[in-house]
Length: 572
Image (tube, rainbow, N blue to C red; front, side):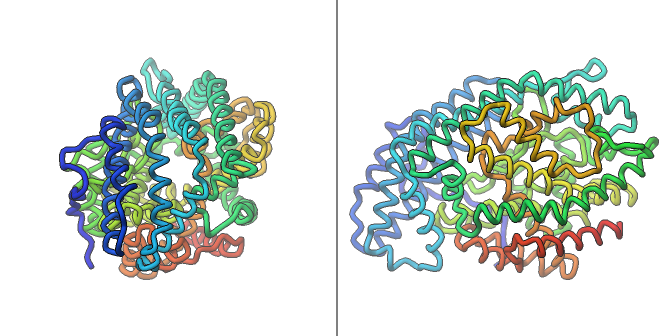
């Protein structure tokens, strides 16, 4: 079946067409109806599941729009209030009903008659939710939803001045590409000083989040939040020991490559030592890459690039644009970061990012574009729950797109030299991200295994882990004061705890797909589409298999993939 971007909003059969989520009073009757409805046959059960799916899609999309609007403008208190209202007044009241509906499904005699191949992962997930549900956690989870967003509010206010002009930290990062070394150092230090101003509030926010998360874990009968979160995230196919093995593999097989990349950069820049403000720089006389001029240009060039790879991918972006589902440019008061937000009812997702005209923005755009394609491909699945795919495959969708599109970046670069530089930048990033993933992941394991730690202990452990994976390439002398709070720039620690190792696992998958692409582009794209169309209806190893990949975190496998990337880099 040829996929299409002519996405249709899910038609309503259970809720009135004009129904909007305003308060719990208007929403509750629908949950009540479903909780009380008798199920006397398999047909009744299937109809009931379709109605639940429709209700979930409407509620989920409403929550998503509240979050999107708030991140697009963190200064508008009415948008923050609307999001907070959902988290504090609606979400907590949904949870007991969700648990009731889950139990009703599991206890229904007709559940055994459902197609077990199609429903296996969904039913497994439902049973997991029943196991984890605790009435006592509802208010804490509501508080956490609101608290987590405070990170964006604090970070969204961070700006610095360069040459008398105010820039967000995302915009200021462009100066780190300048060939003027003193300007780079000046901007680097200004960014770090600005972050330092909010180091204490972020320490306190994180401490508060850790305490509440630990309580959630204890209430659910777990020793620590890490073990609770592994179960909540549905990590059925790998363990914490696999994560530790991944950390070691990065040390053994990736760090030597990272050191080599930085050594090459030092020679290219003709420097005695490479400092952290040098890593994005170009030699004197070489202008930084300027792949696009603004949000509109970024969108149009991305469409052109996707069109050459596969016309369906380009159609997905066009459809989103038609629906005004993009907010691409960095500006003051906007939350940091970038995301693709699936919209369960309308189907076409929303892409949010902070573009400032840099090469890294192209990577972000095609990355989020990969997530968007995944949303389109899984939208036709009959139930909302089937579209809840594991993050480890979601990130394969995005990271593979970064590598697939490289051959079509002519849309962004007029000459071969710039294109070659862009590809080099991408492959370097593909490798250098691994140590950071290992650092953030290892740090989280420690944080939640030691929930009573002090700020001093947190800082000491962070520095120890950071140094373990820092390699020999960059000279950080005299910068420990800044490095000590380097973790605070990682939004995931605050907003989506334990969601980070997925990038490492998926990067391995993406490299595997890119190896396929190099041998047979057509087949690789077909495998990609096939795997993503399955949504969450298969286990993680099965989804990888559908993409022609191995689900494998062993050092030997990682070594093989690194050797492939190194060969590709050497050819450039």
